[in-house]
Each structure stands twice: as structure tokens, then as C-alpha cells.
Length: 88
Image (cartoon, rainbow, N blue to C red; front, side, top):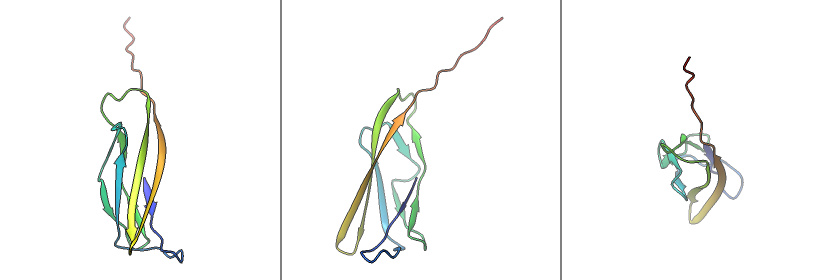
């Protein structure tokens, strides 16, 4: 999952903290707090928590640029995989 931080003029902003959170606890992040790189991009991994049922979650993404707080949400659908073994 990537987030790009831009200022009011639309220029990318490096060195800003981006926070990732799960509203329902159905997903986990490689890191919940990431600094933006020189391109203004913060990247983390997102994985379903172990034994997560088929369900929905909302990912909240927050950062600040100067005195301005910015946020976004992303709705995700988690689909449980079924596994089977064939025995003959």
C-alpha cells in the first residue's frame, strides 16, 4: 500500500510521517508509521490477520503537512481462502 503526500501546491513532500491503521483489526501492516521518501511516497505491506473471516475493513491513512492534517480511507474486502485435501 502506498500513499503520496503533497502540499497545497501539489508538490510532493519528503520526510513526512504517514500513519496506517485498521478500523476493524482485520488487516495488519508491515509498519504503521512510515516516512515519505524523496518522491513523497510512504509504503507499507497489508496482510489479513491470521484466520480472518471473509469480511470488510477500512484502512485509515493520516499525515500532516505543516499545520495541515490530511487523511484518507480505503475500504478493503478480505476473502477467506478455503483449503482442501484430496485423499484417494
